[in-house]
Image: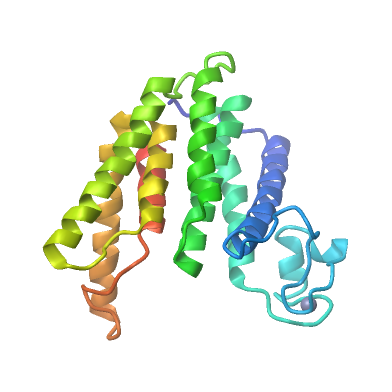
Length: 255
Ligand SMILES: [Zn+2]
């Protein structure tokens, strides 16, 4: 994929704003999906006082800064994750546009990146990866592989490549998890990780799965060893959530 010319200032600003709005919706998904709540109703409300939030408390990035990370109604502290996810999605929108240009291809790549961000943050916060991201994402990728030629999305895998990518991604992690359990008697990887790499494989195609897995494993090992060196309460046997590293590996390898 060749990098395109940088977007014009106005378009860049618009993309940044749209990205931050997508980040705001991602925050809703990250908060509600693990709790089994609907992501559509009720409308945006404070998690502490449960009251619906007025418009001035719902502006992506701006509200967090103006209200100094506090609920406008009850003063409860708002986690910094809300700001970081909105900023991350805004930057992702610009980066994806820079990488793949405008049109349906931008929508596909940005959706994929947003799904990875949501999966990584949810796994960090709760230790689970909702099927709504991994399984539905896999179904969406497979459906998209059929209509990618009509939408002129040139670098999307064929239906066979997408299916093989899911089988390859899920199969490799499933075999790794079984081998680890046989060797150590402990569980090293969860079913959520298996389904997440299957989803990544269905988007990226089977050829890219080994590279993504290698980068993820390397990033996870470096982080695990680093944490064990600087923190007394972490050892090399301490389990770390693997989804953030799978997502990081996919982003680094693909983009
Ligand atoms: Zn409140």
